[in-house]
Length: 402
Image (cartoon, rainbow, N blue to C red; front, side, top):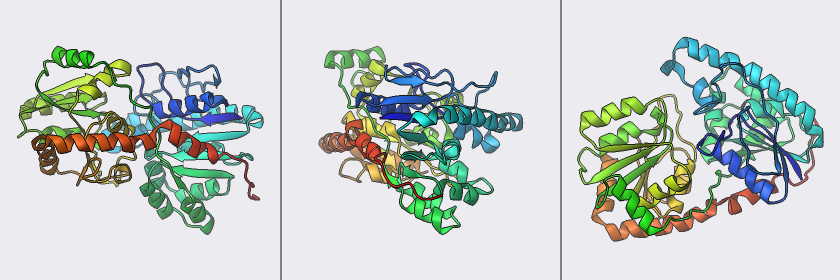
């Protein structure tokens, strides 16, 4: 098949993790023999001969689609200056219109279409007349739920020929609360729950892992690892606080974000040793996953109701055989079965997070067993398992009358 893929986020190089799961799904489809027309912001760098980039020109100096992506910037609320928020919203119609023109130019040649994030993709492609899948990832759902006229937008999407995918069941409930018509409720209720996939973990040579620990002064130390954007939603501040009374654990934080400086200051204030490793990819990322003893994902539930979706980083840590401690928010309970292949704790509570890590330290055999079971669970999220579920939704089906 020749497939169109619309997205507002896509890696710009090998060191860029923004939209990485979009790229991995596109590569999996290309490896299955499909040709991909990718409509992504200029600067995207697809690395497969069967993926053709049709770049969406960006306004000079725009930053809407950099770093955490459009939804994060549009949802910044009081955390961003008024001028920055206004500038971000002003870029939306420009990008949307340019992506729409590219879509109109190319769509007649496609056998099917995959649109990532409800806004703006599901509005742009709403009247595509062949099989279409639109994937809601989380931040887009929260953004939509805060917009005036959201029920009108959902009703328009529901009137299209697309099938809806949500990355965890909680998103379906949030969308349903925004529906006012029977048509939009039926569309949301029929949504498939499919988390984004991961690549199988390739473990580095043990000598390289030992050398990595040595280089960072971590020989003989227990390592707790976190991977993700350094923003309040991810709860890294709470994670640092949870380690105040666990001096035998060294925390490694892998990622970048606007909270980097404040988190460093917080760690120094609490006298908690933290290694901020920055963005890590490829071999460096595999070395940290292999060197770590535990993985911690302390995502919060923010006052506005926003929380994490189905974080790929947790699945990657499980694939590496790490025992995971994660907060019971978003799609995490659908990934982890408590006390079988990981631990789930209530959010926003540093004490219970610290106690869970202490329990793992005191029971090394149990921690090892959790990690082994986590690796088996993670196989369900490899693209070889997840990709076919999405592809099946693009099989020809009867398009409803509009």
